[in-house]
Image 1: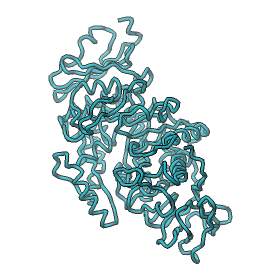
Image 2: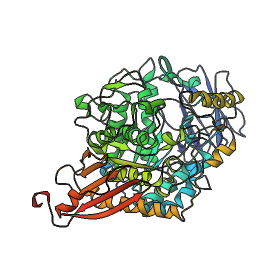
Image 3: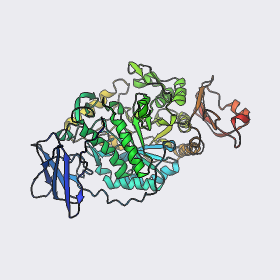
Image 4: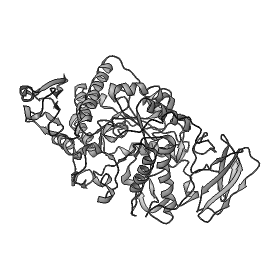
Length: 590
């Protein structure tokens, strides 16, 4: 179904300190507007499409609630700012008041993405967007090209990963609200950095979720790990689809964002045509073209399904890329020897090779953890459409104690893995602090005010790890869990050595990998080392990843005479050697 029903997204501020209030609430019999410190509730007029409207004295800074039928007052479903939290009033803001200076910014093509994922609340001591701004020059000098921000839609309390957001349009007030996010994006663009935002269209959190009062936002026709699915294909879904389509466009238009990362799209249930993800991409790309900017839509999914990136004309959804887990799982299991949970299907070096060559390891084969087949053939899916990592918020934070690779494997192993990540033709993602070997964990933390949820999240977190041999599970509600998860920014000693290593790898990637054909040819040598050529034909780089027991270096490459050893590390029985084709040489000249 094409989404054509126009529902109002925002209440426009008008000249003369007045505002037209509009809210789509087809489930309601009556809706009243309550201006905080006003002179009484104002009855809103219902229109044929289920929209309620009212004209009232209000200007930026005015706070208000809606009263739906006989329910207590609740915030606007399309609040831009909730200054008193998810249960408090909506604040009217002037959306066009920010002084943007990024008019010459046109965005980045996916081929130029080196993603740095961060959580605003733990990235700096300030816990704010302005704190992130202070580190932008550091990120530029590191060589990152795009910052990926974990969700900032308003959530309960002040400590949360962001996936419990309940007001998709409201920017978390404790981070700095709408102006704080705009300052961050503006400053990033000034330094040549793109910014993409993690958004959650598969569910909403529990505390502060008032959408059911307004419309048919949820359906029991489909179920997700969080309960009823968002209603993208049932009765009344047209307005719901418009709500989320508008949200995607809102971030691109109003916040000048360069892209969106869509959380766990396998739990977005939609049996209609076109799929809601197809519509999001089509609408976003149309707006991007109007704005003269490049915008990327990236999906997180564990399905290994090429339909997300196949063009719509070929039965796909046309997204730009997917988070591709198999490279991480194959590397992690090989380095740590962990075989619990979803790692039970990984651990062979051949799987690392397949992930390098094709992106997906599982392409329809039986997956023991699912007890079912997993994936589709990866033919035709370009390697840059695979966003790969050796650490991210999920793979670190979804361990019971949030352990990073820093505490799990030797430093030589971490360097070897980093070289494969950053010199492969895929799209690499770094998790904040990874580049200097941050030792602090990244744990799961929440700040619910509801006592029932407080107890449920603490108990549920312990049950989550029944398939793993992890005894100690920090309480998400304990403030110390959040405090432990903050970066230390210790850049001295061995940390400085790792940081230099990452900078050198990224510089080599930007100079060689990103300027050529984005393919590779990887193989497992007889001695157990992995050899990767980039690109696959007429390679310009050869990377030799050496495990304990491997012969270091590559005599065959060195004997060819057309190569320069650019980087070489041997540490903790691991090693990595990188050869670069000598200037003026080609494969045919060997």
